[in-house]
Length: 584
Image: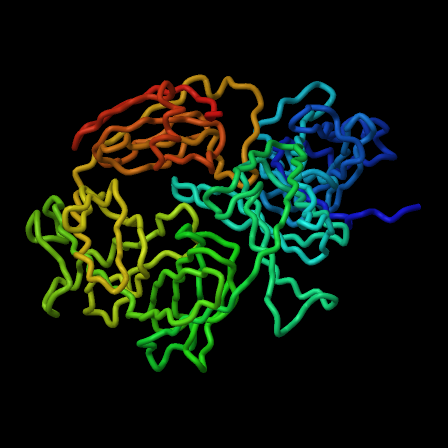
């Protein structure tokens, strides 16, 4: 019997919440005294199905979260649990959350069931309010089949290599905007084959890491060095130009990659103005100015130089310090010889002041409707916006994994100066988190930061970020029609109990702030305070984690869906909404 080509993968789980009522048996009865006890036991019946084909999944393991109940589905994907009735000892704990884990005397019992099987993904969807039949509780557990990206890396000589490393990136939406985030890595087998398994439906990009050719049979340490530059599937020379692989659940995508051997040349770039207390630099190498993964150079602390090997081409090198913040940038060109003589000068990272203008209605916290708090002398109002407001910078590039920049913490109880320190060069979206009022406007110089990114140049001074806060909100409430009459639906097992998810999305170039509004079990919502503006209000039966609500092009798919609402300060609006289907 041949061995499997790839090791078995760990089982993945699916959690769902099932509500059922358990009626306590007569404390005096027992199986010997009551021959009908077995008929009075609670039974939970169900079926595990493939979420794509809806076919039954046989030999799937279904078990309770506490592992007291477990069984495999039969060949038709069906399972059945029988729950014992409580005895007199357990009846003494007839309280919600009793130690035995059951609720007696007709109270609702919450049980967590999990299903798993190789070849299927972890799925956070479950069932709320399952339908019942006279024979017992009948539920359906869907399992989502994994998607795969498989292929083979071939060298130009048609000889496979067992040392090629590949990386897979997935497009993920974070706070309404999509970014490319590293998903996984793999190494080719001895025959050049590779495999990325357990992938969810989504958009991906695939690349090979560069590899120097040090074959002991042909390698000459004194001769010309050769290597294999990164290939961005199928045959691009930078990450931006790579093909987007669109996977659906259960799909197997074939991705062949061919590498071409190129001469590699030494690269040395002197780094000037390095602070004494900087322990080192991380170096980002971008081919032809396109930021992305693939190439690598290092920093030599002793020589204070960026060193490594690169093939012919034009590159942008960015240096970011690992300790006290300093950064540098330089463009270099490698053309048929060693690249030496280039020089990078690092400068301290930027600090950006934040000025807040409050236009709140008079109350016990403010002596006048309008005043300004800024980075100035120590006599500024110590009870200012720091108590309710924070500002952070989120990298605006399509590819970027840099952590957000936050305001520095106060140095003491009287420090309410608002400054964002250690800001690297780049383009940033300015995010304001507030527990009071709303952002009426935010700008830097003439740039409207509600709709345009903040540009921070290397070592350049940046105008202060100016924020105007107001509290003259509008108010909405309403209901999602027909929600309580819908058939059984799936919903996240980690849900907060909301049967639907309501999103208020400002239209492009309009004022307003994105809101995710909680919906009550009966479909009603609000009253909810919301910033004035023009919104598209969308209601879904589950969270929309991939909703690019800050991308006007992506939101065009919803132009004919939901409800448009124009709100002015002090307005109260009652809405009647219908559930919408996610855009394809």
